[in-house]
Image (cartoon, rainbow, N blue to C red; front, side, top):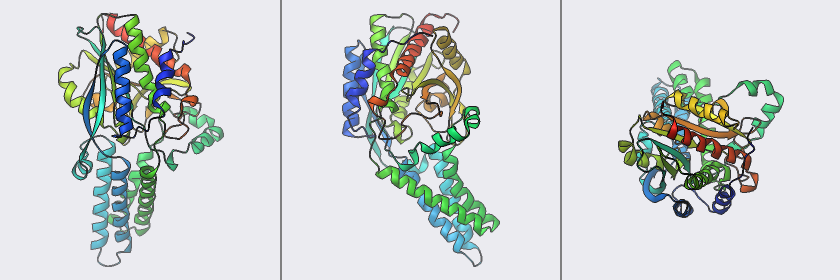
Length: 403
């Protein structure tokens, strides 16, 4: 195994930006974008801050839909007449559930687009490597930070791993929390159709809990976001310096730090509209870095809050694993996420896509959306490994004639 060298930019970036309150669309997020752009420019990149837009979420719109489901469930449960109220409540719950699934799965997002106005954010886009190359590697991160909430308390997962270590070891896909959210409207609608008042009541209770959970997230403070996701931003800066000091030919490297990722994909959609038309699918690869400061570096194979989808083109993930193995960098495979990252957007657009993440011994993201997500809790060895693997992938794409 190659002993990692901690590039000085890794600590610098995280420690400089963590004190900024970087909620999506906030002044602190914009300040972080400007700082990152300047730092990448100093590292020899052609850098610009691009204006972007996002629709506010996720807690507010999904909480609103859960509240509608709760009211619809109460109507369905209390109807003891001819059933019109019961069926109407079930229909409203079904529509609310469909809207929640549409939102978290990154499809049309009808409700969010209709009920919220576009808000400003920004993406940092920097070009390095061989500017004239036909091939392009897009290395992605995001510089905003999430709100905390009671739901992110990691003690239950730690208890589960302690009591049932074999079960946790066998499971490489995270728990589908969004299924619990969708269970509320599904139970209300099913109970209404089947005339099962107890089932509709169960769905109403689940929807009420979801409403309270989303309200708690919406009103909670923003975390420092050192691991999620300044750890990845630091890799962008360190990679820029590595490619400046040891240039590569044959590959253009685009370093992308998106705003408003924590609303369940915000700034990345503006990037897609502007850049996808000029990035050929057979000459472009997307490597997403998200939360790479936990103890164990891992390759996420796919994601899906509702339906699991492997990222497009397994060959790219195989290449990353092969490069990591040959360079002596530990990389766990087989992980899949039941939440979503910005990687889903290029994957849906049929670009070869992969995500590097990191996990702890419980297969959790360290300090995920918690106030303890601070620079002193970062495992810088893992961040250095992420940098090592990312650079090795770039050099492989630049030199391998068979890709």
